[in-house]
Image (cartoon, rainbow, N blue to C red; front, side, top):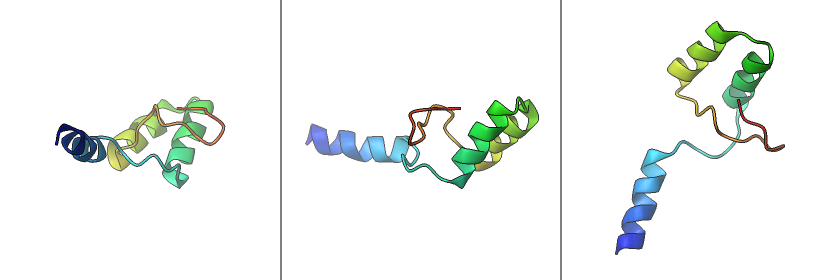
Length: 59
C-alpha cells in the first residue's frame, strides 16, 4: 500500500527522533558559538540540526 511505502521510506530517511547526548553536544556547541565543533558533530555524527530537544529547541 502507499501508506506502508511512505512509512518505510520515512523511517529510512529521517534520523531518530530521540534526543541523545550527541544532540545535546551539538546544541551546546551552537550556544557556545563554536562553529568548528558544530561542523564536526554534524559531519562525524550525522546529526540533524533541526531535531527538537524536550524543550522544543533545536541547534
